[in-house]
Length: 509
Image (cartoon, rainbow, N blue to C red; front, side, top):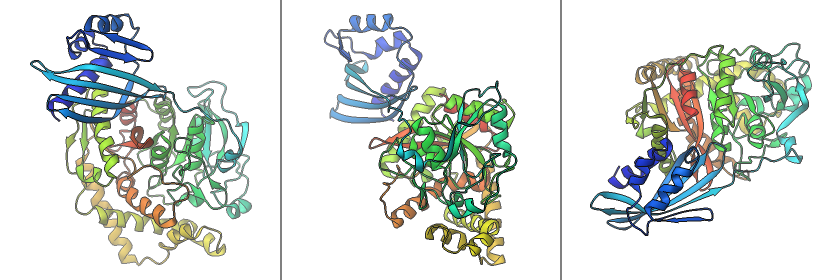
């Protein structure tokens, strides 16, 4: 990082800490130094300093997502930073920096705020989000840490008194009314949450797009005209619209992390086996997890504590990045990712992320082994039903199941061996006090009218990023910290087994 960006990040650190002495230092000591915000224009260091000292609490907490540099001359540059505030509003700050005998200083600065996206009221589009709703659909306990929280339950979890539809009308027609709640549903209800409704899923959860040929594509309010991501697109859309506060969802190969990335949400995939999955319709049990989506990282952590039944967390002390993994994302995502990593280190007070090699030359082999075992397990779960209902599934979904139909035993055994080796490698690479940072998806959400080949290409590229946590059973948290052409992309944290709460704590910074 050159000395100009070092100066910029030091200035950001002073803003975060409301360090008035440091802030005075970074503004040029000249009578024509200027700072503008809204309808206020301040000139000269004394006027700017007086303004800061009368401002209650300093600048609002924010995350710098991306920094753009235009070098006008060797000693003169313009920096524009894209920022995200805790309330969801966005902003831009543009600064003219000049280098003098004492180094770089700000000569002019302009700050502008962009209002947060307005939460939309339920309308006709809600039919592609909800299978059924209520006011509430199911009431939770009168008191608890989640009292008043509304949950969108993915249509794979048993909800007593209702049928499980699995994203397919033929499945729904044959389903019996559930007598008891799924374990995760019961834990959330007992903690005081209400079920707002049962939200659509991609068919039998074997997709990452959020498009359902039977019920439509749930709208993505964070990226209008684009898919929400799947297979938890229904809960993600409900939370992104403000129709629910939490989404109870599943993640087998990325079905929480992908919609979180596309819809600008926080998403948590737990350590495999730590959240009970009783009453959940399985896809591939070796990789299935029950996790959450939320707009508020604090609420996400509180709900995770309910599901995990613990509150302890050893803090993360080291951030790491694998350039090979970062390079799997689109170039604009890589640029935004680099800025987001710096901002996370600044906010948490941790050292800048170290470069390490987590992936190996075997990454494609790991993905192939993962997809093989996933397909075999998925066919074992649902193959008999699929054979009895030809044509009931969308062709591309049926093809994914069919890929697991006739896998030879020796190929399955080789795949399982490859996964065991990959898990051992990742366990060694990620000690308990370390978090791996990587883009949650390879790019922003594709348009709803993207062709099947484009959607499949995006899916394959993203799976290279999401499969690491899935195949190793590791916890992962997606944060809405990247921005590409005005569209959200997630920053993903992956940690060692059992470090869920430590990762969720990082998300609150």
